[in-house]
Image (tube, one colour):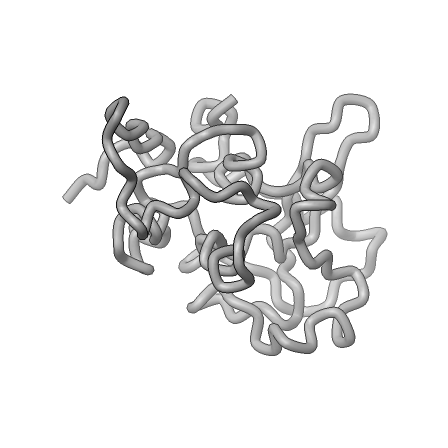
Length: 173
């Protein structure tokens, strides 16, 4: 069964129509969201938990197949979310104040999309109503071959990946 174009956004609401309460992301600015609303924006793809390189000249992000040691590759969530900063000092907790500096976030990330004034994709759990839609659309890390052994920093470049759904043709630029 085809789920459609994974990067196709949901059409905006009809002019004059009232947004349903569950469509809070269309009505509430990022900085005004409750903690629960903010956390629910995460689509649980796990891609922000991969080691990555950012080309300083052009800003292009290069992902690797090396996840944070705390990433659960099935649920695509942190195994110790509450203590993630203490366990991994390189983990960046997202906030409305630092989103503009987090250009390494995937182009499909809800935080990034909303900060750029864009809509969530059809597969986002808040839109689809299913936590599995992100996995079915091929957006998440679930089922990807990940290198779970420690990798020395000088060897990370050998682990760069460009999985098909993340290719240039699939990115919503």
